Image 1: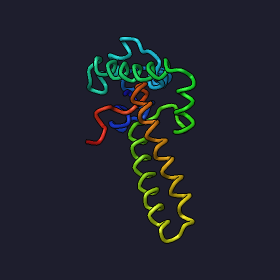
Image 2: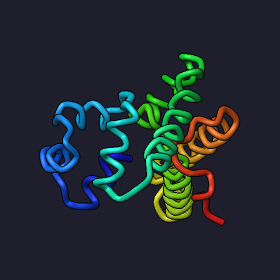
Image 3: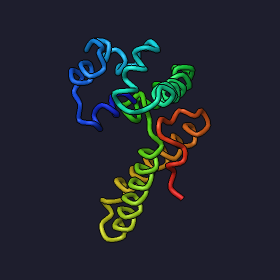
Image 4: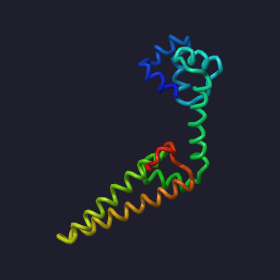
Length: 154
């Protein structure tokens, strides 16, 4: 949260440190997720014109997501990592991949009526689309998504 606020106000870490009276290293530690003292948060909140509760509340929400992810079994973390190449999977990416793979798969299977060589590619896309469907179901079941659940398309 601190980094986003700092960037939105077009401030560098050095400028924020100078304005708040804190050390640059302190700003770096807080931005990397380490705990900050109440005095440091008060200084930053006054410079950024937000209240301390906003700074700490947003950080706790991020920590809650990472705690849910951290408590998942190792096989599940690796299953999502292998399929997303990221330890922070997004449901939005899954839905996008599912729609893309199904659309390409159906298009290639339809094209296979003209040229039979397109059929294996179409079937591969369809299988990948169903893999994304399985990932979506497992992600919902275990609650591993890092995006907001209200962001799902209607």
